Image (tube, rainbow, N blue to C red):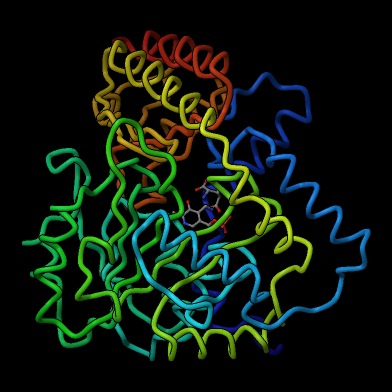
Amino acid sequence: MVQRLSQRVQQIAPSATMSVDAKTKALLQAGQPVVNMSVGEPDFDTPVAAAFAGVQAIVNGNTRYTAAAGTVELRRAIAEKLARENGLAYTPNQIVVSSGAKHTLYNIFMSILDPGDEVIVPAPYWVSYPEQIRLAGGVPVVVESDESTGFKMTPERLAAALTKKTKAVLLNSPNNPTGAVYNASELRALGDVLQNHDCLIVTDEIYEKLVYGVEYTSFAAACPDLMDRTLLVNGFSKAFAMTGWRLGYVACAEDLATAMASLQSHGTGSPSTMSQAAGLAAFAAFNSDVVSAFWRRRDVLVAGLRNIAGIECELPDGAFYVFPNVRAAFGRAYEGRVIGNALDYAEVLLEKHWVATVPGDAFGAPNNIRLSYATSLQNVEEALRRIQDFHRVLGF
Ligand code: PMP
Ligand code: GLU
């Protein structure tokens, strides 16, 4: 029989974050009392002004295709945002809007990679990067980091990973899954290494608004010399709680933007017209209460986890994830079942104590698990009680 699936899709695994979330939602629907700490999706509502602008677009008949790269109005508003908030000068022609930052990243890798091109991916990394790079024919080159450097890639490690085949370096700050935030001098130190290496820099800044007591710096603002080689990725999902609207964007050199718009014109055609109208209204509707709510949850969650024997937990500066180390539990038995790794740990925690988390293996960090605190403070507190019980059964 004919091989129905391409080699391309045969080599990818489904998104672990989305699979755990689907499994959790199925359990919840079946009436199980699961606390969902798995998916990275704000539990707040889209700002009313943005939602209303989307509805208005539909009702007013603003329901046709837009330019492939997105409406000029939205691209102008994004350029203004990048100037106002990040100190970066872009023209609307340097911006391409897509159906979510995930789609933006996909367009980027499809547009810049040839077979065999290497992309440096600092670990722990978000699940979709390596798969997207491979789908585009590229080779992800993982650079490890752990708690000893606050989960940040050091300039030395970056320098050691660069080769003649390095086409791009990926940066993600604030980071998913660790919450690590690179400060301006750390970005400059990485930029110094890249000065002498002619490659692109893809910087995923989708969590930029979610930082707690530290200043956020965009990579190109820290390293203006490298701006022409930088592809800045951002979107509306996290800052504006607009995950389902599917809206993200890239700002970069015009030749790259033109190529991506052309690719997109044959893929989705354009991003959703009503979502773009909503996004345009979102900029004026940012709700900073969301940041204080996340901040409070982070503090409660980290303090609680640090109180549980057998868990070590960094204090992340941003995003809405914590990434505790649970290695001490490996080798211990839970009612006769040995917890061999983070996958077993997360599975038993879900099945026996009803807390959904994502095992670190999916992020290239097998000693850790990820908990998202994009959920209520009550859920955070309940999850802590349950993890405490779980650890008691493990004999801590
Ligand atoms: N980058 C990172 C690091 C993320 O965590 C996410 C969340 N899914 C995305 C990009 C993509 O977000 P979206 O496609 O919803 O804009
Ligand atoms: N980025 C979120 C997460 O990591 C949403 C799911 C996804 O797109 O992977 O949980």
